[in-house]
Amino acid sequence: MSQATASPPATALNMSHRQILQALSGLLLGMFVAILSSTVVSNALPRIITDLGGGQSAYTWVITAALLATTATTPIWGKLADLTSKKALVQLALLIYVLGSVLAGAAQGTGELIACRVLQGVGAGGLTALAQVIMATIIAPRERGRYSGYLGAVMAVGTIGGPLVGGVIVDTSWLGWRWCFYVGVPFAMAALVVLQKTLRLPVVKRKAQIDWWGATMITAAVSVLLIWVSLAGDQFAWASWATVAMVGGALLLGALAIRIETRAAEPMIPPHLFRSRTITLATVASIAVGIGMFGASVFLGQYFQLSRGESPTMAGLMTLPMILGLVVSSTLTGRVISRTGRWKRFLVVGSALLTAGFALLGTLRADTNFALLSCYMALVGIGLGMTMQNLVLAVQNTVSPRELGAASSVVAFFRSLGGAVGVSALGAVLAHKVTGYLADGFARLGIPATGTGGGALPDLHTLPAPIRTIVENAYGHGAGDIFLAAAPFTLLALIAVSFIKEVPLRRHNDEMPNVHTERKLAVATATRTDEQR
Image (cartoon, rainbow, N blue to C red; front, side):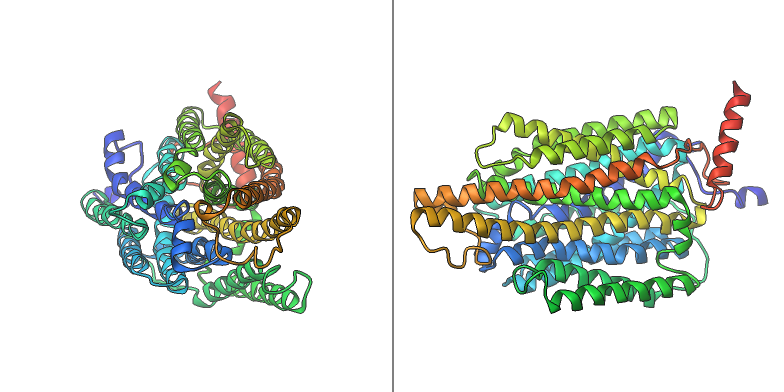
C-alpha cells in the first residue's frame, strides 16, 4: 500500500485514451478561452476603434496590452504550478478572465478598454501556462505528442478562428462589438464546471516561495520595451534621447531581473534551464513563432478590411486556409510524433514553411490574387502547426518533473513576448509605412496629406472612390512590408531548431532528465535502441 501511495502521477500508460480526454476536456476548453480572448477582437478592431475614436496606436495596444499581461504573468503561473494545486490555479485564472471580459465589454473609451484587456491577459496567462503543465503531469512524454496535437488544434482554432467569430459578432446588428468580450464568458464558466468534475491531480505540498521581485523586474523590462516600440516613430524619433532612455531603462531592468533570478530560491525563470542547448534554442524559436502566430492573425484581418474592403465576417472567412493548415498539420504531426518518438524533423520543416510563407506574404498588395494569397496563408498555418506545440514538447522532454511548470512557462513566456513585441513593432512599422504611401498617393492627386498616419482608422465606405483607392493601396502595400519584415525572424527560428539535438521522447514521466544530463540521456537512449535491435 505504501508503494502505491508513493507512485508517480498517472500517465498515459495507466489511463485509457478516454480517461485522458475526459481529464483534458475542461483544460482544452479553458485554453480555447485564453486564445480566443487574444484574437476575437482582431477583425472587430477597426469597428471598435472607430466607434471609440481611437487611432492606429490604440488599435495596436488593445492587442498588445493583453499579450503583455499574458507574457508577464506566465512565469508566475508556471512557478505557482510547481508549488501548489494546479487545479485551483487554473480555476482562479478562469475567474480572473471572466471578470476582465465583463469589464472590457462595458468599456467606454480606448484607455479603459486597454486596462480591462490587461486583466483579461492575466487570466489568459494562467490558462496558457497551466494547460501545458497539467498535460505534462498526467501524460507520458512519448504519448504527449498525440495530445499536444489536440491542444495545438484548439490553439489553432482560437488563434486563427477567433477573428472569424469576432467578425460575425460585429456584423450581427443585435449583438455588436461588445459581445466580442462577452462571448468567452460562457465558455469560461463551462470550463470551470468541467474542470471541477473531470480533472484529478495530485496536490503538491511544498512551501511556496514566490520570487515577486524577479517577476516585477521582468514585467517592468518587458513593459518599457513595448511602450518604446509602440511610441517610437510616432511620438518621438527612433533615434532620439527618448529612445536611449527607454531602451537603456529596459536593458537595466532586464539586467536587474537576471541578477535577482540567479539569487532567488524559487526564481520565476530559473537561469540554470538555459544551460540546456535545447531550451535555449527552443526559446529563440518560440519568439519567432510568437511573432508569426499573433502577427498573422492581427494584421491579416486588418488587411482584408482596410485594403480589400471586406466585412469583418468575410475577413475571418478569408483566413480559413491558414486555419485549416494549422489544424491539420498540428493534429497529424502530433500522431506521427507519438508513434515514432521523433520530433525535430517537424520543427525544421515547419520553420522552413513558416519562413517561406512570410516571405511570400511580403509580396502582398491590395489586388493580390486570392488564390495565391490562400497558398501563402496555408504555408504559414502548416508551419505554425508543426512548430508551436512541438517546441514545448522538446523542452518538457528535457527537464525533471519538478520543473515542468517553470520550463513549460518559459516557452509560453517567450512565445507571448514575441507576439507582444511583434504586434507592437509591426503595428508601428505599418503606421509609418501607411503614412508614407498615403502622402505619395495624395500628392499625385494634389491633396495635402495631413494627419494621415496617427489619426483614426478610415471608414472605406464613406470615402470618395479616388481616395478610397489610395487608402486601400496604402494599407495593402504596408501589410506586405510588415510581413516581409517578419520573415527574417522566422528564418532565425529555422536556424535555431536546426541546431537542437534531438532526444527521442520517453514513455514514462518518472526519471526524466534535468538540463545537465541531456547528452548522457541521448547516449543512453541510443544504447537502449541498439540493444533492442
